[in-house]
Amino acid sequence: MSIEIRGVSRNFGEFAALKDVSLLVETGELVALLGPSGSGKTTLLRIIAGLEYPTAGTILFHGEDAIRRDARSRQVGFVFQHYALFRHMTVFENIAFGLRVRPRALRPTKADIEARVMELLKLVQLEGLAQRFPSQLSGGQRQRVALARALAVEPKVLLLDEPFGALDARVRQELRSWLRRLHDELHITSVFVTHDQEEALEVADRVVVMNKGQIEQVGSPEDVYENPANPFVMNFLGSVNLFHARVHDGEAHIGPSTAPVTTAQDAATIGYVRPHELDILRSRNGGPTLEAVIKHIHAIGPTVRVELARRDNGELMEAELTRERFTELALKNGEQVHVKARKLQVFTEDYSI
Amino acid sequence: MADTATRPRLATESLPVRIFLIGVTLIFLALFLGLPLASVFAEAFASGRGPYFEALKDPYTISAIKLTLLTAAVSVPLNVLFGLAAAWAIAKFDFWGKNLLLTLIDLPFAVSPVIAGMIFVLLLGKFSPLGGWLDAHQIKIIFAVPGIILATTFVTFPFVARELLPVMQAQGVEEEQAALVLGATGWQSFWRVTLPNIKWGLLYGVILCNARAMGEFGAVSVVSGKILGQTNTLPLQVEALNDDYNFVGAFAAASLLAMLGLVTLVIKSFVEWRTARNE
Image (cartoon, rainbow over all chains, first blue to last red; front, side):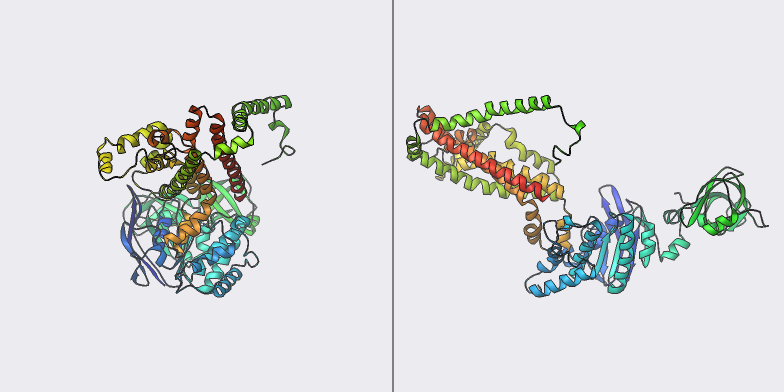
C-alpha cells in the first residue's frame, strides 16, 4: 500500500515541528526518514501511524484519506523506539495481542493464533523463547519481539521509530542487514526513522533527509550521497572539508583549484570535498594542487585518516586514504605534501550550516 | 539488595554506631508503637476472655461494626473508581487544569478532617439552601448514614489516586499506544494493558484507603450526630464507651480496629514484597 503525505504541517504551540511536508512512499518500498533530533522525522512517522494529528495537510493510504481513521483502524504496524512491549505478558502473549483483541467475528481461532505466533517467532528467529517475559530478553531480542508483534496483525504499512537506536554497535549491524533481508522477503511498505546516516544509506531503498521540519532531499542512497542538494545534506551524510572560495567567471577558485558553477555572480562561496575525495601527492605533477603540512595521522582500520593544514592560510582539512595508498606514499607527521581534490562541490544558493 | 557479606567495608558504619542507631530506633518504636498497641489488648482482656467477647456482643457495638463495614464497602469502591479515573487522566493525558486537579486531589490531606466534616454540615445541613431543599424532600444526609459515607469518601479520596499516579507516570503511555495501533479499543487497552501493570499499586492504595475509611474519626464525628445504634461508627463507639467508663467495652472495640491495622500492615508488606519482586 502506498503512502502519500500531502502538505502536512504540525505545530506544538509556537514550535513548528513540520512545515508543509509532502512525500510519496511507493508500495513495497523501504524508506528512511533521516535527520538530526528535532527535525520532525518522528512526528511525521507518528502522524502516518495516527498517533499524532497534523495541524494541516493530509495522509493518503493507497489514495484514500487516512486522517479520518484513527490509529486503531489504519492497519499499520508500529515498532516503538523503546519497543513498548507489554511487560506483564510473555513473548507469546505479546505477539498474539493484536489477534486477541479483534472483534469476535474477525478473531482467529485459538489454534490459528498459536500457529501464527509460532510462524512469526520462527521468522524473527526467537523459537523457544515464547514463554519468556520481556524483562528476560536482551535488547536485540526485544526488538525482534516488537517487530513480530507489529507483523502479527498483517499490517499494510510497517513503521519503525529509531529501530536500532537503543542497541549496541554489533547487534545494530546484525539487525540492520536482517531487517533488509526481511523486507526483501515480505515486501511490505516500510518507513523507518533514524538519525544515523550509515543506517539509512545501508538499509533503505530511498532516503528522505529532513531538517527543521522540512524535507531537504529525497533520493536513493547513492543519489543523496553523491549529489547532495545542499550543504546541509552534504554535511549530514558524512564528514566533509570546507574550503573558502571565490566565484569568478563561472568558476569557483580555491587556491589553484577550480570548479564550474552555474551562477555568474562574483562572490565568496564555500567548496565542499569529502575526505576520501582528497588525494595526497608527493609532487605537483602538473595539475592544480594545494600545498599542505601533515599534522596528524590516524592509521587504524582499513582506511587512514590524515589531518593537514594548508600552507597559505593554515585552514585544517582531513583526507582519507586507503591503506595501500598510505603505504605507497610513506607519509610522516610534519611532512610537506600536495593535496588534490578529485571532486569539489559548490552550492551557489545562499545557505548556512 | 546487597547483603552484609558483599557490601564494601568502607560503606558500613562501625559496630557501636550501628548498635546505637538501631537501638534508638527500636526503643522509640517500642515506646510509641509497641507499648500503646500492647496496652490496648491488655486493657481489652483485663477482665478475662469472657467479658471481652461479651463486650463485643453489645448491640450498639455490633451496629457500629456493621456501619463501619458498610461505610468502607461503599467509599472504598467509589474511591477506586475516582482514583483510577483521576490517575489515568493525569498520567496519560495532557489537558488544561491538570495542576489544579492534582492540587484538588491532595485537598483532603491538607484540610483537617474536622473541617471537612464541618463543610458538609454547612453545605448540606438543615439551615443551608441545599440542606433545606433536601429536608423538604425527606432526604436525610447529615446526621445519617449518607453523610458518614460522604465524609469518609472525601477524607480517603487521595489514597488510591496518590498511590497510582507515580506508577502510571513511570510507565508512560507507550504500551497503551502500542495496544491502540494493534487494534485494541480503549476498554481492551485498559483491562489488558493498563490494569495488569498497576494492579499491585492499586491493591496497595485500596488497603490504605480501607484502613483509613474504617478508622476515620474527625470528619465522621461531625456529620454523624453519634446516635447510638444508628450513626455510630466503630471509632465513635470507642469514644462513647470510653466516656461511659466502660473500659473493657471501649478497648475491646479498639482492639478490633488495632487488628484491622495489623492485618493491613501484613497485606501491605506482602504487596510491597510482590511489587519489588515484579520489578
